[in-house]
Length: 291
Image 1 (spheres, one colour):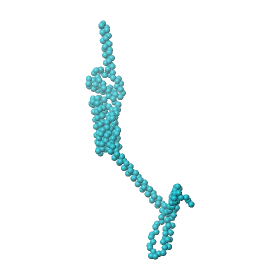
Image 2 (tube, rainbow, N blue to C red; image 1 turned 45 degrees about the vertical axis):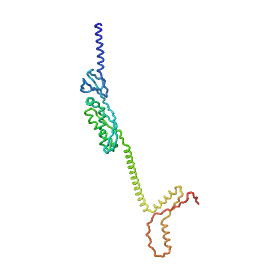
Image 3 (cartoon, one colour; image 1 turned 90 degrees about the vertical axis):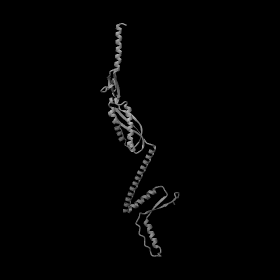
Image 4 (cartoon, rainbow, N blue to C red; image 1 turned 180 degrees about the vertical axis):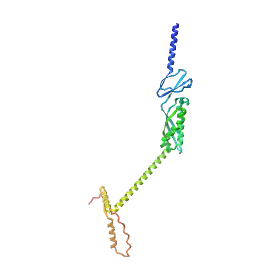
């Protein structure tokens, strides 16, 4: 091989090595990522932003960290509430990395670590809450869970908990039946109270109507005639004929006066106060033909 060929071969080898080295030194970081560079095992200050970045081949190693909000489901946790009710609660956690260096250096796997902290915190919150709070006051429990999980994660690990939501509260079947009976009893209680209030208001209005009719006897007669018209409008075999009660009393007194008195006359009973005229009811067979 001639010296010229040797030089060309060496230059070719250098070019290929340089090309592969250049390719290995180029890294692309996405908009939602940050790059953390380790040089000989030691992390460099600062992070690499989105776009094209260069590192020293073989010496540097760059790891990318996703800064997007991550959604993590917390498996259902069995617990006993403060009022001794067994429940099973699951939740969902929303978090994101705010310090990529801490997320890589201070914790081995921040996703698994956040999951474990969320599970233990959820069990702790279940033990301090009542069943009514779990079912009706979830906003308060969500805020409490967010604060509890965020305390050990944001400072040391560089992970911020954005939001925690309780998804489902599973109750035992016996507790569901008890709550159903309680709700039914409460509804029946409210129904009876409303019915009693309605009866009270109706009685009050009837008393006012009676007082108004007592002040004007003609009003009572008009009401009686109206009732007769309403009954006659129905297709039935009942005939209502108004008959004054005072006439019956007059005939009764006339009969007692015409009887022979064998003994001293007894003291006459006190006259009853005038009452409203009654109505005698004559009922004829439904199939009877009028004369």
